[in-house]
Length: 486
Image (cartoon, rainbow, N blue to C red; front, side, top):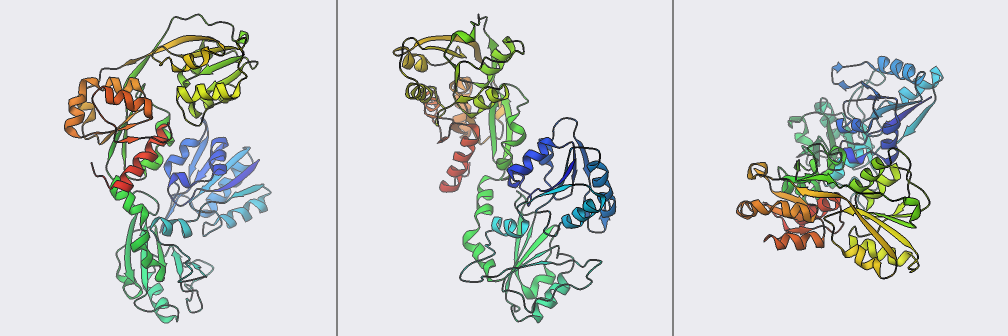
Protein backbone atom coordinates (compact mmCIF):
# COMPACT_ATOMS: atom_id res chain seq x y z
CA UNK A 1 0.00 0.00 0.00
CA UNK A 2 1.64 3.20 -1.24
CA UNK A 3 0.53 6.81 -1.66
CA UNK A 4 2.15 8.37 -4.71
CA UNK A 5 2.58 12.15 -4.65
CA UNK A 6 2.39 12.79 -8.40
CA UNK A 7 3.19 16.09 -10.10
CA UNK A 8 0.58 16.82 -12.77
CA UNK A 9 2.66 19.52 -14.46
CA UNK A 10 1.78 23.18 -15.00
CA UNK A 11 -1.56 22.80 -16.82
CA UNK A 12 -1.11 21.42 -20.32
CA UNK A 13 -2.23 17.80 -19.76
CA UNK A 14 0.50 16.43 -22.02
CA UNK A 15 3.19 17.75 -19.70
CA UNK A 16 2.61 15.03 -17.10
CA UNK A 17 5.44 12.49 -16.90
CA UNK A 18 5.11 9.00 -18.36
CA UNK A 19 5.43 7.55 -14.86
CA UNK A 20 2.73 9.85 -13.53
CA UNK A 21 0.42 8.84 -16.37
CA UNK A 22 1.06 5.14 -15.69
CA UNK A 23 0.26 5.52 -12.00
CA UNK A 24 -3.00 7.28 -12.82
CA UNK A 25 -3.94 4.24 -14.91
CA UNK A 26 -3.05 1.89 -12.04
CA UNK A 27 -4.60 3.90 -9.20
CA UNK A 28 -7.32 2.52 -6.97
CA UNK A 29 -8.00 6.05 -5.68
CA UNK A 30 -7.02 9.54 -6.85
CA UNK A 31 -7.04 12.72 -4.76
CA UNK A 32 -6.64 15.72 -7.06
CA UNK A 33 -6.47 19.48 -6.70
CA UNK A 34 -7.81 22.53 -8.54
CA UNK A 35 -4.77 23.08 -10.74
CA UNK A 36 -4.74 19.62 -12.33
CA UNK A 37 -6.21 19.36 -15.82
CA UNK A 38 -9.55 17.45 -15.67
CA UNK A 39 -8.67 15.32 -18.71
CA UNK A 40 -5.92 13.61 -16.69
CA UNK A 41 -8.62 11.78 -14.77
CA UNK A 42 -9.55 9.99 -18.00
CA UNK A 43 -6.45 7.84 -17.50
CA UNK A 44 -8.11 6.29 -14.44
CA UNK A 45 -9.28 2.71 -14.71
CA UNK A 46 -12.96 1.82 -14.25
CA UNK A 47 -13.96 1.79 -10.60
CA UNK A 48 -11.17 4.11 -9.47
CA UNK A 49 -12.28 6.36 -6.58
CA UNK A 50 -11.81 10.10 -7.20
CA UNK A 51 -11.72 12.84 -4.54
CA UNK A 52 -11.50 16.58 -5.20
CA UNK A 53 -9.36 18.40 -2.64
CA UNK A 54 -9.10 21.75 -4.38
CA UNK A 55 -8.15 25.02 -2.77
CA UNK A 56 -8.90 28.54 -3.84
CA UNK A 57 -8.05 31.75 -2.02
CA UNK A 58 -10.36 32.02 1.03
CA UNK A 59 -12.26 28.90 -0.05
CA UNK A 60 -11.12 25.34 0.58
CA UNK A 61 -13.30 22.52 -0.70
CA UNK A 62 -11.31 20.33 1.66
CA UNK A 63 -8.99 21.66 4.36
CA UNK A 64 -5.37 20.54 4.42
CA UNK A 65 -5.99 18.57 7.61
CA UNK A 66 -8.92 16.80 5.96
CA UNK A 67 -6.78 16.03 2.91
CA UNK A 68 -4.05 14.60 5.11
CA UNK A 69 -6.53 12.35 6.94
CA UNK A 70 -8.07 11.22 3.64
CA UNK A 71 -4.64 10.21 2.28
CA UNK A 72 -3.95 8.16 5.41
CA UNK A 73 -7.34 6.49 5.21
CA UNK A 74 -7.02 5.65 1.50
CA UNK A 75 -3.38 4.62 1.92
CA UNK A 76 -4.37 2.05 4.52
CA UNK A 77 -7.15 0.61 2.34
CA UNK A 78 -5.78 0.51 -1.23
CA UNK A 79 -2.66 -0.70 -3.01
CA UNK A 80 -2.15 2.36 -5.22
CA UNK A 81 -3.28 5.84 -4.16
CA UNK A 82 -2.35 8.86 -6.29
CA UNK A 83 -2.25 12.33 -4.79
CA UNK A 84 -2.31 14.38 -8.00
CA UNK A 85 -0.90 17.86 -7.49
CA UNK A 86 -0.45 20.72 -9.95
CA UNK A 87 3.15 21.39 -10.97
CA UNK A 88 5.65 19.57 -8.77
CA UNK A 89 4.59 18.19 -5.35
CA UNK A 90 7.60 19.67 -3.55
CA UNK A 91 7.54 23.16 -5.11
CA UNK A 92 5.06 25.23 -3.08
CA UNK A 93 2.58 22.37 -3.32
CA UNK A 94 2.48 21.33 0.35
CA UNK A 95 3.58 17.91 -0.82
CA UNK A 96 6.28 17.80 1.83
CA UNK A 97 3.71 18.46 4.55
CA UNK A 98 1.53 15.63 3.24
CA UNK A 99 4.56 13.33 3.06
CA UNK A 100 5.43 14.15 6.69
CA UNK A 101 1.88 13.33 7.74
CA UNK A 102 2.02 9.99 5.91
CA UNK A 103 5.35 9.15 7.58
CA UNK A 104 3.85 9.92 10.99
CA UNK A 105 0.90 7.61 10.22
CA UNK A 106 3.21 4.84 8.98
CA UNK A 107 1.94 4.99 5.37
CA UNK A 108 4.63 4.46 2.69
CA UNK A 109 4.86 7.17 0.03
CA UNK A 110 6.74 7.83 -3.21
CA UNK A 111 7.29 11.19 -4.91
CA UNK A 112 6.86 11.45 -8.69
CA UNK A 113 8.25 14.88 -9.66
CA UNK A 114 6.33 17.04 -12.08
CA UNK A 115 7.28 19.83 -14.44
CA UNK A 116 7.09 22.92 -12.27
CA UNK A 117 5.20 26.01 -13.35
CA UNK A 118 8.29 27.95 -12.24
CA UNK A 119 10.06 27.07 -15.49
CA UNK A 120 7.26 25.82 -17.75
CA UNK A 121 4.87 28.77 -17.55
CA UNK A 122 7.51 31.40 -18.42
CA UNK A 123 8.74 29.10 -21.21
CA UNK A 124 5.24 28.97 -22.75
CA UNK A 125 5.19 32.77 -22.52
CA UNK A 126 8.48 32.99 -24.43
CA UNK A 127 10.49 33.95 -21.33
CA UNK A 128 13.59 31.91 -20.43
CA UNK A 129 14.18 32.11 -16.68
CA UNK A 130 17.95 31.98 -17.23
CA UNK A 131 20.07 33.54 -19.97
CA UNK A 132 23.84 34.03 -20.17
CA UNK A 133 23.44 37.68 -21.10
CA UNK A 134 21.16 38.51 -18.19
CA UNK A 135 21.43 36.14 -15.22
CA UNK A 136 23.12 33.02 -13.93
CA UNK A 137 20.91 32.85 -10.84
CA UNK A 138 17.18 32.63 -10.28
CA UNK A 139 15.03 33.18 -7.21
CA UNK A 140 11.79 31.30 -6.67
CA UNK A 141 9.53 33.13 -4.26
CA UNK A 142 6.07 32.65 -2.80
CA UNK A 143 4.08 35.85 -2.75
CA UNK A 144 1.68 34.55 -0.14
CA UNK A 145 2.02 34.77 3.61
CA UNK A 146 1.57 31.59 5.64
CA UNK A 147 0.85 30.72 9.22
CA UNK A 148 4.60 30.16 9.63
CA UNK A 149 5.76 33.34 7.92
CA UNK A 150 3.73 36.53 8.08
CA UNK A 151 6.20 38.55 6.02
CA UNK A 152 6.75 38.40 2.27
CA UNK A 153 10.36 37.75 1.29
CA UNK A 154 12.85 40.61 1.04
CA UNK A 155 14.31 40.88 -2.48
CA UNK A 156 17.37 42.85 -1.33
CA UNK A 157 19.88 40.05 -1.83
CA UNK A 158 18.04 38.10 -4.48
CA UNK A 159 19.29 37.41 -8.06
CA UNK A 160 18.31 39.73 -10.95
CA UNK A 161 15.48 37.43 -12.06
CA UNK A 162 12.68 36.32 -9.77
CA UNK A 163 9.70 34.04 -10.34
CA UNK A 164 6.92 34.79 -7.87
CA UNK A 165 4.12 32.29 -7.35
CA UNK A 166 0.80 33.05 -5.66
CA UNK A 167 1.53 36.76 -5.64
CA UNK A 168 -1.58 38.24 -7.24
CA UNK A 169 -3.30 39.33 -4.01
CA UNK A 170 -0.17 40.82 -2.42
CA UNK A 171 1.03 42.90 -5.36
CA UNK A 172 1.18 46.09 -3.31
CA UNK A 173 3.62 44.65 -0.78
CA UNK A 174 5.60 42.83 -3.50
CA UNK A 175 5.94 46.07 -5.47
CA UNK A 176 7.20 47.91 -2.39
CA UNK A 177 9.80 45.26 -1.65
CA UNK A 178 10.98 45.14 -5.28
CA UNK A 179 11.40 48.93 -5.36
CA UNK A 180 13.36 48.86 -2.11
CA UNK A 181 15.84 46.29 -3.44
CA UNK A 182 19.09 47.05 -5.25
CA UNK A 183 18.45 44.40 -7.90
CA UNK A 184 15.37 46.04 -9.40
CA UNK A 185 14.17 49.52 -10.23
CA UNK A 186 10.89 51.09 -11.27
CA UNK A 187 11.41 50.32 -14.98
CA UNK A 188 12.45 46.67 -14.57
CA UNK A 189 10.16 44.63 -16.86
CA UNK A 190 7.55 42.33 -15.33
CA UNK A 191 5.37 39.63 -16.91
CA UNK A 192 2.17 38.42 -15.26
CA UNK A 193 1.07 35.08 -16.70
CA UNK A 194 -2.35 33.59 -16.03
CA UNK A 195 -3.56 30.12 -17.09
CA UNK A 196 -0.02 29.31 -18.17
CA UNK A 197 0.52 26.55 -20.80
CA UNK A 198 -3.22 26.40 -21.55
CA UNK A 199 -5.07 27.65 -24.62
CA UNK A 200 -6.50 30.57 -22.59
CA UNK A 201 -3.05 31.65 -21.43
CA UNK A 202 -2.79 35.42 -20.99
CA UNK A 203 0.37 37.45 -20.54
CA UNK A 204 0.45 41.05 -19.29
CA UNK A 205 3.74 42.92 -19.63
CA UNK A 206 4.33 45.80 -17.26
CA UNK A 207 7.07 47.24 -15.04
CA UNK A 208 7.81 47.00 -11.33
CA UNK A 209 6.32 50.40 -10.59
CA UNK A 210 3.05 49.48 -12.33
CA UNK A 211 2.80 45.93 -11.00
CA UNK A 212 0.43 46.93 -8.22
CA UNK A 213 -2.05 48.48 -10.66
CA UNK A 214 -2.11 45.58 -13.15
CA UNK A 215 -5.46 43.83 -13.47
CA UNK A 216 -4.89 40.08 -13.26
CA UNK A 217 -6.74 36.90 -12.44
CA UNK A 218 -5.65 33.85 -10.50
CA UNK A 219 -3.79 31.57 -10.72
CA UNK A 220 -1.00 33.87 -11.83
CA UNK A 221 2.77 33.66 -12.00
CA UNK A 222 4.96 36.78 -11.99
CA UNK A 223 8.38 37.02 -13.64
CA UNK A 224 10.60 40.00 -12.78
CA UNK A 225 13.77 40.81 -14.70
CA UNK A 226 15.26 41.79 -18.04
CA UNK A 227 14.61 38.32 -19.48
CA UNK A 228 10.95 39.35 -19.77
CA UNK A 229 11.86 41.47 -22.81
CA UNK A 230 12.96 38.32 -24.66
CA UNK A 231 9.26 37.52 -25.03
CA UNK A 232 9.21 39.97 -27.95
CA UNK A 233 11.37 37.51 -29.92
CA UNK A 234 10.63 34.13 -28.32
CA UNK A 235 6.85 34.19 -27.98
CA UNK A 236 6.32 30.83 -29.69
CA UNK A 237 3.21 29.49 -27.96
CA UNK A 238 0.96 32.54 -28.30
CA UNK A 239 2.03 32.91 -31.93
CA UNK A 240 1.16 29.30 -32.69
CA UNK A 241 -2.09 29.48 -30.72
CA UNK A 242 -3.18 32.64 -32.55
CA UNK A 243 -2.67 30.91 -35.91
CA UNK A 244 -4.58 27.82 -34.76
CA UNK A 245 -7.24 29.36 -32.53
CA UNK A 246 -10.86 28.48 -33.36
CA UNK A 247 -9.87 26.38 -36.36
CA UNK A 248 -12.17 23.41 -36.79
CA UNK A 249 -10.84 20.01 -37.81
CA UNK A 250 -13.01 17.08 -38.83
CA UNK A 251 -11.47 13.66 -38.23
CA UNK A 252 -13.25 10.70 -39.83
CA UNK A 253 -14.04 7.63 -37.81
CA UNK A 254 -16.13 4.53 -38.07
CA UNK A 255 -18.48 5.63 -35.25
CA UNK A 256 -19.48 8.70 -33.23
CA UNK A 257 -17.43 7.52 -30.28
CA UNK A 258 -13.73 7.17 -30.93
CA UNK A 259 -11.21 6.19 -28.27
CA UNK A 260 -8.56 8.37 -29.92
CA UNK A 261 -10.63 11.44 -29.12
CA UNK A 262 -10.03 11.10 -25.38
CA UNK A 263 -6.35 11.86 -25.18
CA UNK A 264 -4.33 11.86 -28.40
CA UNK A 265 -5.83 15.14 -29.61
CA UNK A 266 -5.39 17.02 -26.30
CA UNK A 267 -2.38 18.94 -27.59
CA UNK A 268 -4.42 20.22 -30.57
CA UNK A 269 -7.32 21.21 -28.31
CA UNK A 270 -4.85 23.06 -26.08
CA UNK A 271 -4.13 25.34 -29.04
CA UNK A 272 -7.81 26.28 -29.22
CA UNK A 273 -8.58 23.93 -32.11
CA UNK A 274 -12.09 22.49 -32.26
CA UNK A 275 -12.06 18.82 -33.20
CA UNK A 276 -15.12 16.91 -34.32
CA UNK A 277 -15.21 13.18 -35.03
CA UNK A 278 -17.63 12.34 -37.83
CA UNK A 279 -18.33 8.79 -39.04
CA UNK A 280 -17.30 8.54 -42.68
CA UNK A 281 -17.12 4.77 -42.88
CA UNK A 282 -18.74 1.61 -41.69
CA UNK A 283 -17.35 -1.91 -41.62
CA UNK A 284 -19.02 -4.94 -43.16
CA UNK A 285 -17.52 -8.20 -41.90
CA UNK A 286 -17.10 -10.69 -44.73
CA UNK A 287 -18.26 -14.28 -44.63
CA UNK A 288 -14.84 -15.92 -44.53
CA UNK A 289 -13.37 -19.23 -43.46
CA UNK A 290 -10.48 -18.78 -41.08
CA UNK A 291 -7.78 -21.41 -41.52
CA UNK A 292 -5.69 -22.79 -38.66
CA UNK A 293 -3.28 -19.93 -37.92
CA UNK A 294 -0.71 -22.44 -36.66
CA UNK A 295 -0.31 -23.63 -40.26
CA UNK A 296 1.38 -20.34 -41.20
CA UNK A 297 4.91 -19.10 -40.56
CA UNK A 298 3.97 -15.44 -40.82
CA UNK A 299 0.71 -13.59 -40.14
CA UNK A 300 0.22 -10.02 -41.35
CA UNK A 301 -2.36 -7.54 -40.07
CA UNK A 302 -2.88 -4.19 -41.79
CA UNK A 303 -5.38 -2.65 -39.37
CA UNK A 304 -6.55 -2.61 -35.78
CA UNK A 305 -10.02 -3.61 -37.05
CA UNK A 306 -8.59 -6.77 -38.58
CA UNK A 307 -7.08 -7.80 -35.23
CA UNK A 308 -10.42 -7.21 -33.49
CA UNK A 309 -12.33 -9.30 -36.04
CA UNK A 310 -9.93 -12.25 -35.90
CA UNK A 311 -9.78 -12.22 -32.08
CA UNK A 312 -13.57 -12.23 -31.97
CA UNK A 313 -13.64 -15.14 -34.42
CA UNK A 314 -11.22 -16.97 -32.11
CA UNK A 315 -13.94 -16.60 -29.44
CA UNK A 316 -11.63 -15.34 -26.73
CA UNK A 317 -8.90 -17.93 -27.28
CA UNK A 318 -5.39 -16.46 -27.47
CA UNK A 319 -3.79 -16.01 -30.87
CA UNK A 320 -1.09 -18.66 -31.47
CA UNK A 321 2.43 -17.51 -30.59
CA UNK A 322 4.16 -19.83 -33.07
CA UNK A 323 3.91 -17.65 -36.21
CA UNK A 324 5.86 -14.42 -36.68
CA UNK A 325 3.58 -11.36 -36.76
CA UNK A 326 3.86 -8.16 -38.78
CA UNK A 327 1.63 -5.09 -38.40
CA UNK A 328 1.29 -2.02 -40.58
CA UNK A 329 1.82 0.53 -37.80
CA UNK A 330 1.82 1.29 -34.07
CA UNK A 331 -1.98 1.27 -33.65
CA UNK A 332 -2.25 -2.27 -35.04
CA UNK A 333 0.85 -3.28 -33.08
CA UNK A 334 -0.70 -1.97 -29.85
CA UNK A 335 -3.92 -3.91 -30.44
CA UNK A 336 -1.90 -7.11 -31.00
CA UNK A 337 0.10 -6.42 -27.85
CA UNK A 338 -3.17 -6.23 -25.89
CA UNK A 339 -3.77 -9.78 -27.12
CA UNK A 340 -0.33 -10.93 -26.00
CA UNK A 341 1.27 -10.86 -29.44
CA UNK A 342 4.54 -9.12 -30.33
CA UNK A 343 4.70 -7.76 -33.88
CA UNK A 344 7.04 -5.73 -36.05
CA UNK A 345 5.98 -2.71 -38.10
CA UNK A 346 7.78 -0.48 -40.64
CA UNK A 347 8.85 3.10 -40.00
CA UNK A 348 6.47 4.26 -42.74
CA UNK A 349 2.98 2.98 -42.16
CA UNK A 350 2.04 1.92 -45.71
CA UNK A 351 1.45 -1.47 -47.32
CA UNK A 352 4.47 -0.98 -49.59
CA UNK A 353 6.72 -0.20 -46.62
CA UNK A 354 5.29 -3.24 -44.84
CA UNK A 355 6.13 -5.42 -47.84
CA UNK A 356 9.66 -4.02 -47.97
CA UNK A 357 10.13 -4.79 -44.25
CA UNK A 358 8.98 -8.41 -44.67
CA UNK A 359 11.28 -8.89 -47.68
CA UNK A 360 14.16 -7.45 -45.67
CA UNK A 361 13.61 -9.52 -42.53
CA UNK A 362 12.60 -12.92 -43.92
CA UNK A 363 14.79 -15.32 -45.81
CA UNK A 364 13.24 -15.70 -49.24
CA UNK A 365 11.81 -19.19 -49.46
CA UNK A 366 8.75 -20.49 -51.30
CA UNK A 367 8.12 -22.88 -48.42
CA UNK A 368 7.50 -19.96 -46.08
CA UNK A 369 3.75 -19.56 -45.74
CA UNK A 370 2.39 -16.04 -45.19
CA UNK A 371 -1.22 -15.23 -44.28
CA UNK A 372 -2.46 -11.67 -44.89
CA UNK A 373 -5.67 -10.69 -43.08
CA UNK A 374 -6.99 -7.39 -44.34
CA UNK A 375 -9.76 -5.32 -45.92
CA UNK A 376 -11.37 -6.26 -49.23
CA UNK A 377 -10.74 -2.64 -50.31
CA UNK A 378 -6.97 -2.93 -49.90
CA UNK A 379 -4.65 -2.37 -52.84
CA UNK A 380 -2.88 -5.51 -54.18
CA UNK A 381 0.62 -4.07 -53.65
CA UNK A 382 1.51 -6.06 -50.53
CA UNK A 383 0.45 -9.43 -51.91
CA UNK A 384 2.12 -8.76 -55.27
CA UNK A 385 5.44 -7.85 -53.61
CA UNK A 386 5.53 -11.06 -51.56
CA UNK A 387 4.17 -13.60 -54.06
CA UNK A 388 7.45 -13.89 -55.96
CA UNK A 389 9.37 -15.14 -52.94
CA UNK A 390 6.85 -16.77 -50.58
CA UNK A 391 3.65 -18.80 -50.54
CA UNK A 392 1.03 -16.16 -49.82
CA UNK A 393 -2.63 -16.43 -48.90
CA UNK A 394 -4.72 -13.29 -48.52
CA UNK A 395 -8.14 -13.37 -46.87
CA UNK A 396 -10.44 -10.33 -47.08
CA UNK A 397 -12.08 -10.35 -43.65
CA UNK A 398 -14.02 -7.10 -43.87
CA UNK A 399 -15.09 -4.41 -46.28
CA UNK A 400 -15.00 -0.66 -45.68
CA UNK A 401 -18.12 1.09 -46.96
CA UNK A 402 -18.26 4.90 -47.24
CA UNK A 403 -21.21 6.43 -45.41
CA UNK A 404 -23.32 8.98 -47.24
CA UNK A 405 -22.28 12.35 -45.84
CA UNK A 406 -23.98 15.71 -46.16
CA UNK A 407 -22.70 19.25 -46.59
CA UNK A 408 -24.27 20.35 -43.29
CA UNK A 409 -21.86 18.16 -41.35
CA UNK A 410 -18.95 20.36 -42.44
CA UNK A 411 -20.35 23.74 -41.45
CA UNK A 412 -17.49 25.93 -40.23
CA UNK A 413 -14.84 23.29 -41.00
CA UNK A 414 -11.33 24.48 -41.86
CA UNK A 415 -9.58 21.14 -42.36
CA UNK A 416 -10.58 17.51 -42.91
CA UNK A 417 -8.16 14.71 -42.06
CA UNK A 418 -8.18 12.15 -44.88
CA UNK A 419 -7.01 8.99 -43.16
CA UNK A 420 -7.46 6.52 -46.04
CA UNK A 421 -8.39 6.27 -49.70
CA UNK A 422 -11.88 5.10 -48.77
CA UNK A 423 -12.34 8.31 -46.76
CA UNK A 424 -11.30 10.36 -49.80
CA UNK A 425 -13.84 8.54 -51.97
CA UNK A 426 -16.56 9.29 -49.41
CA UNK A 427 -16.02 13.00 -50.18
CA UNK A 428 -16.99 12.55 -53.84
CA UNK A 429 -20.55 13.92 -53.42
CA UNK A 430 -19.33 17.15 -51.77
CA UNK A 431 -16.25 17.98 -53.87
CA UNK A 432 -17.82 21.28 -54.98
CA UNK A 433 -18.59 22.24 -51.37
CA UNK A 434 -14.98 21.59 -50.33
CA UNK A 435 -13.66 23.70 -53.18
CA UNK A 436 -16.19 26.46 -52.58
CA UNK A 437 -15.58 26.74 -48.87
CA UNK A 438 -11.83 26.28 -49.34
CA UNK A 439 -11.68 23.47 -46.82
CA UNK A 440 -8.13 22.19 -46.54
CA UNK A 441 -7.51 18.45 -46.80
CA UNK A 442 -4.78 16.84 -44.73
CA UNK A 443 -3.61 13.54 -46.19
CA UNK A 444 -2.21 10.69 -44.12
CA UNK A 445 0.28 9.72 -46.82
CA UNK A 446 1.23 9.59 -50.53
CA UNK A 447 -1.14 6.80 -51.58
CA UNK A 448 -4.10 8.62 -50.00
CA UNK A 449 -2.94 11.87 -51.62
CA UNK A 450 -3.09 10.17 -55.00
CA UNK A 451 -6.71 9.13 -54.46
CA UNK A 452 -7.57 12.66 -53.27
CA UNK A 453 -6.22 13.97 -56.58
CA UNK A 454 -8.21 11.37 -58.52
CA UNK A 455 -11.50 12.78 -57.17
CA UNK A 456 -10.49 16.28 -58.28
CA UNK A 457 -9.10 17.69 -55.01
CA UNK A 458 -5.63 18.47 -53.73
CA UNK A 459 -4.28 18.05 -50.18
CA UNK A 460 -2.80 21.16 -48.57
CA UNK A 461 -0.74 18.99 -46.22
CA UNK A 462 0.65 15.47 -46.50
CA UNK A 463 1.71 13.91 -43.20
CA UNK A 464 5.35 12.91 -42.80
CA UNK A 465 4.36 10.31 -40.20
CA UNK A 466 1.38 8.30 -41.36
CA UNK A 467 -0.79 8.47 -38.23
CA UNK A 468 -3.53 10.82 -37.05
CA UNK A 469 -1.10 12.39 -34.59
CA UNK A 470 1.42 12.75 -37.41
CA UNK A 471 -1.24 14.52 -39.46
CA UNK A 472 -1.74 16.94 -36.57
CA UNK A 473 1.97 17.71 -36.35
CA UNK A 474 2.20 18.31 -40.10
CA UNK A 475 -0.84 20.62 -40.01
CA UNK A 476 0.62 22.67 -37.14
CA UNK A 477 3.92 22.87 -39.02
CA UNK A 478 1.99 24.11 -42.07
CA UNK A 479 0.17 26.78 -40.05
CA UNK A 480 3.34 27.84 -38.25
CA UNK A 481 5.61 28.15 -41.27
CA UNK A 482 3.17 29.52 -43.78
CA UNK A 483 1.00 31.57 -41.43
CA UNK A 484 -2.10 30.25 -43.14
CA UNK A 485 -5.46 31.44 -41.81
CA UNK A 486 -8.28 29.56 -43.45
